[in-house]
Length: 297
Image (tube, rainbow, N blue to C red):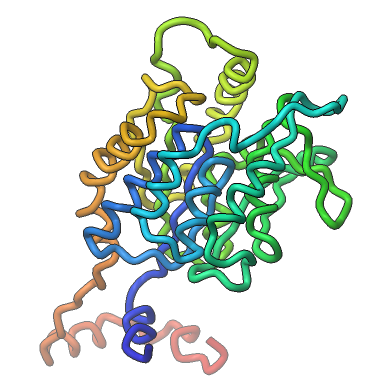
């Protein structure tokens, strides 16, 4: 443990920000696999909507292969069911049950890695960043697609909906946890390249949300040091059965970024100055600048 702490103190703390993107969020698993294979450390993780599902599993101590196995069996029936409500077509309580049944730990305080999950306060329109309490509930709130799923009410009486409305790429959330170096994964960078209009009501809602999110994403990506963009534009957001394809696309996008990340993690090595170089530097320092010798500086 002492050795790990020493290594951490000598390098930037790395945060991973996983975007929303419904089924496309499975591409995050491929990114995680490549980062692990190349021994790139992850100290903090944040997720929005679909990204929160992958982030929660990884933060809870599940291996990449275990998270991938869950993605292969997950279907829409595991996410929601029809409900009698004026606020939505379905309740996504099933998603909370699905996540809770598979996480090895249930609360933020028990996680292996610090985690932030982003939802939206429907009344104020502000981001709600959850870092404590029930992880499965937080994931459910972050994935409550407005107009389709009934908003989720938290202990403070707030109606929470999909975090993608305000922070689809949670770079600020993971930096707020303490990350020095932020790696963002945007699974929606290519938009929608598939041919034809959406084939369902949820498809229309999803595509409308993605149009809105692109403008906000530009600013969110500016807060990242490295951006990984899986080429998922040809896959619809509701194609959950394509988990293996999406994982492979995540791997392909992450590999070219590995060297840049490693470069950013390397400490800057300064060549020791020779005695005459030190003397020259001392001679070049202005002697009449009182601020340089002031005990108050």
